[in-house]
Image (cartoon, rainbow, N blue to C red):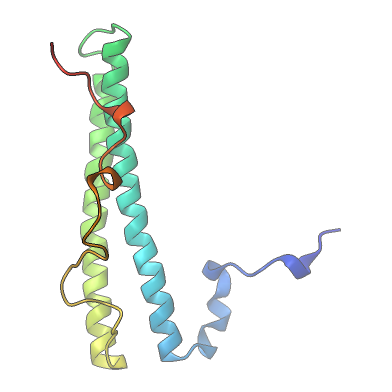
Length: 139
């Protein structure tokens, strides 16, 4: 028998509670989920870029022909393009939600007017792929 007292309802399945949500709570939840979706797209792009680098490096390191696996590389690039397209659509969603927030709910102070870095002191190591993914330098 499963103890259901420890199971928390998934936010995705909490639609039945939507009527009890105040505008302030709704804004906070939408903002949270939107930011998580944006971060997930960024993470997917980073992981795909790392995969591309690893695939090319592995091909070179194993002595495979220069165009071996080209079809897989092209498919990965199409996948990256789809992620970029999805990011553009998500940016449009963000913009529309911001407009609705201002027009109907009095705005959302959590959403900056322009893009800003949360921490200006970010070092390059935080955004660059790890050295194990770097291509060998030509001699």
